[in-house]
Length: 255
Image (cartoon, rainbow, N blue to C red):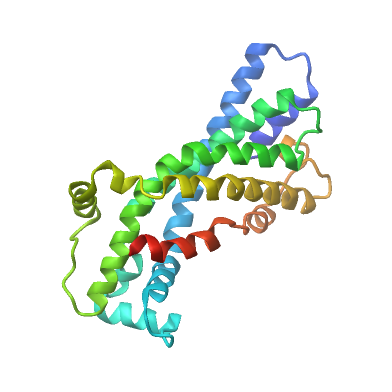
């Protein structure tokens, strides 16, 4: 991360760099973002999976008295500890390329925008515009995998109620969805997801860049002129704008 910051600082301060050198630096910065985003996506998926499973079960339960702790106990009794990670396979497989794509494409879009923008480096509006552009490629990746994940989690509710599972694995679930609806089954909700993620990613990166600037004394974090501690990076990344909308959409999608 420090090396990436140094490269960004050099790019902003040394105007004598040749076009080829700048192009090489931009490629290195984008590749760093791809690697960091992929690793972060895997961590996000593994850590958040149990909370996501409990949330979906609670949304699908008819009883108002189904508290999260009660749902966790029900899952542990019926499926064991592994039940808390039921359906994690598809989102994990997509989280690595998805978040690599998110941060890699955001870095590339930000570099492109900065070459034509008259605003100072690291301006939140440029970060938001680059974030909005992120939604286009990620929607193609996220929509089909989310469809499989929701089907698997809905099937987990059947198992918890004592019924036999419909799907033995995520791959078998995907094959069944393909046989029942073809490509249309996996693209269901594509435009709704795109309409949600354009402002979602824009606000995510706007708040993220603003938080990073606020958490440093020097400012200008996004152009590499100030360092940011890991703790400050974690604090800046706590904002996740898509969760609330996704929570409202998942019960309808499962039905």
